[in-house]
Length: 208
Image (cartoon, rainbow, N blue to C red):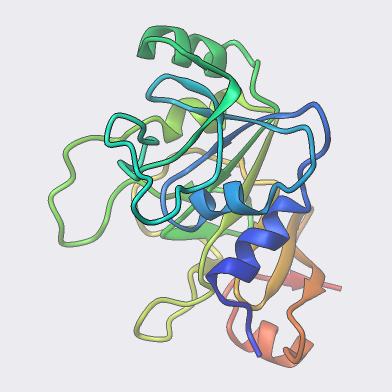
């Protein structure tokens, strides 16, 4: 069976190592905070928070504590708060080791499109363009296909790009892919998903 959202987030959390400063994008990536466990990971949010905890239990929400996706979160004993200018100085200055982001499209060259939703009014690009330019490693977590069954892992992105050649690893409900010379390499398959199913759902070139 393909991974569900929590399983994708848990798999993404396995990419994190002690001592890392990590930014989580909106959507599935925010769930990664629930799977960090005992790792010494510091989560950064571009709206001005360093040291995010997991989502609160029902009834314990604090409306003043939100992440960049406007979801209520919890703080830790070491949490620090600051303005957006300081937050983006951290990002642009290369202080964040990794970003885990969602995407509408990713292609075989590592290009990323994740800020414009087709047919919907978008109020702004958010911080993703700064993130993909400033962090050390970019991991995309998303469903492998859209609601129509079309691949979101493409030969070439069709939507406006967030960044060119910025994606290192792609984690979908079908498995894990790395961006390599000539296309994408299968690193891991979700339990019960075959190589043939992965290839059939992927428009991009998969190299052996």
